Length: 71
Image (tube, rainbow, N blue to C red; front, side, top):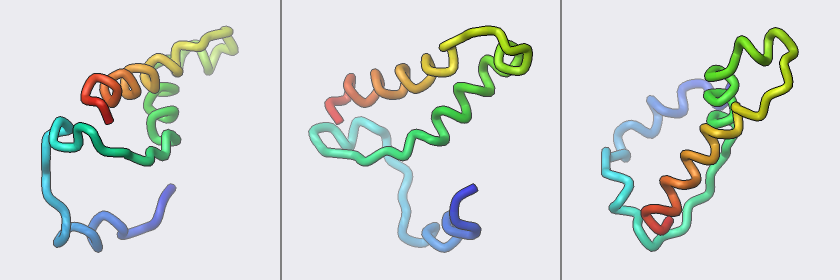
């Protein structure tokens, strides 16, 4: 999944910052990883073919975080 070795390649030009430092800016998000993490949260239901939308809650939480910081 993704581009192999991309993070190691970009490591020299990256810095760790709190999300609030991006307040008032625009971000482009590939939510595929958020959906993956959301599916991990409710893997049992999905595996047993139980109808659920719980995997979307993780995406909503992340979007709420972005909205909270006005991103």
